[in-house]
Length: 313
Image (cartoon, rainbow, N blue to C red; front, top):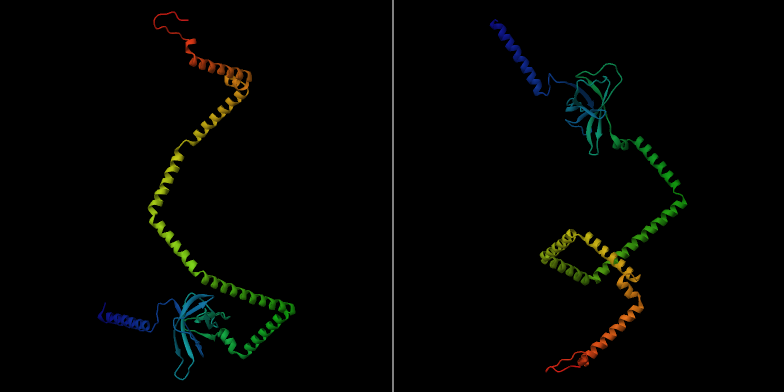
């Protein structure tokens, strides 16, 4: 390759890079995927650079900058970009609107009806949506609004007939009386608290003392609870069911034995139910007592002892 060709290629590349760099510094991107659009407004109503450009509630672009058309023309030209793949007719409108309760501004794209679509560098129709405050500033719209409010008030007046007004007045009186009762209750409560202030202080002091005692005897209370737990465990481990079963068996057998005695079965039953036998036993016991008494008083009648070998009678 000749030297002249190399110099020419380097010069062309240098110019291209210089052109691209200059546009980049100006905020233009030659390889951008966005369309550059314009709109001219008499006023922008607080719109600033970086405000969103939206369509159907979705952000499709951003405001880049705002400038006066010229030193003599004080209209404002707004430069903004939108995504290149979004298509709108050429007679679409860029409407400045208010978003949210904080009054943030945005550019809303309203599509037109032409067949030809927008191209990068086109200028859109401009409009400013004043919102509610704009409607109030317009005398015609304000008159319509006041007329609507007046009609609404007349309808409400018709709805509130004499009976309704009397009921509302009675409700207001009841509310006033209720508030008066609440005031009296509040005053009585204040008086009660003031009169019983010393007693309440004593109660709180006693509660604090009880709490202090509980805190001091926390170890003892814990030991008592532990003892209760041990007793509970012992009762749980004991075969209470078997003991109760044995007791039931014993009571059943005792009841059966008493029933047999009552029916005269066995020796005890005969003794308990045969009065004659009982009388004879009593008589025999009495005779035995007399015999023992006589033996004690006159032993020689029954036992004779001879010391010298004499004949005993």
